[in-house]
Structures are given as structure tokens and as C-alpha cells.
Image (cartoon, rainbow, N blue to C red):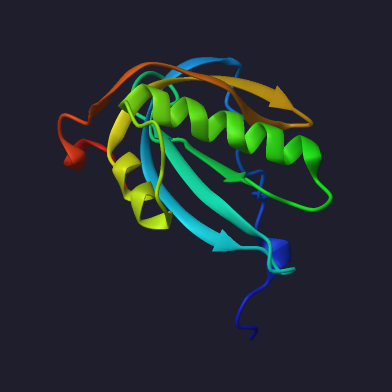
Length: 138
């Protein structure tokens, strides 16, 4: 008798494909500074769709503000962080602790799809605190 026989399982792991292109109401769940394996700092951003048929789907994005080789990633990371700052009314971030200002804020995010992954095309509207954090799964 075996502990587990994979041949008896019909389902395959398919995971989720990207969220379809469009504007979604999303809540910032996580926004912290992190470091890649080469020591380059980035901001780890996790957002959750709060309404509609894709409610509770997660979006993960790494925002590079500086990187010696990835100019495009830095451009996109800076643009995304600028948009987040604008929707909550911040002009500057003094350091990584200021990233906590984004947690729990809900805003409209324009999502695109590139190479089967979601990308942030823009962040719109004035961010507001989520009405009830219990309604947004963590």
C-alpha cells in the first residue's frame, strides 16, 4: 500500500491565469521594502480585487526604484509608486516606514496583461480606506 498514488488523481494544477484587462477596485494588502537575491532593493506590493467576478484575486508586483540593469523595470516601478502617492496625497516618502501609508487603501487600478502576467497600467481616483477590512481576505 502506498502513501500517495498520483495516478489516481485526475485534476491538474492549472493555477489562475491573469485577471482580464480592465479597471478594478483593489485594496493594498502589503507594501514593504525587500531585496532581491543580488541585493537590489525593491518594494513588494500585493493588492486584492475587492469587487466583481474577480473579487479576492491577488496581484503581486515588485517595484524597483533603482537597478543597475533593468531600466524598464525601474521606470515602471517609479511610475506605479508615484501613482500610489498621488491617489493618497503624498508628495514624498521619507523611507521604507512610509510605505505603511498604503496598507488598507482602496483605489481603482487599470490592469493590463503582458506575457500572461498582469501589469499595472495606471492607478486612478482618490484612494479611500477600505470600509471593512474583514470584507477583504488576507
